[in-house]
Amino acid sequence: MANCTGATSLPVPRESFDKCIIAWSQLVEETFVLQRAGKVRILLNSFQSRVRYDSPYDKLTEEWNTIEAWMTNQSAAAPVGVKGMYFSSEDFWWNDTNSDILRAAYGAAAIALAAAALVILFSSRSSSLYLLSLRLLSF
Image (cartoon, rainbow, N blue to C red; front, side):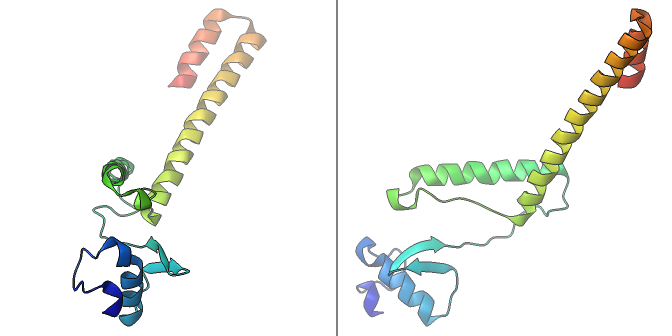
């Protein structure tokens, strides 16, 4: 291709990368190369994850942390122009939502237990009844 300064495979010389990859993507009608004003802005890369959105919460979290650590390592070693890479997936959006719901549920339970314990303490004015109720409510 004329835009690739003679390169026929990767790596492509840095000075012709944008022109070359844009021309190639248009030639083969690839949509994962997003460009503006002749400069590549986004390269989308898909892969098959080892987990699905309905996998157990712990497995999703473990996989997210594994991928995020890999992305951090790759970003640290990447050239300046691509250090802003990030990872996103609908499967992990669901995991994040579940995490927020779980934290909110624990917080709500703690508030409810504390409020119930205080009501029992102030209404009965009995520390032994308060402690017994606190123990029963916590169960």
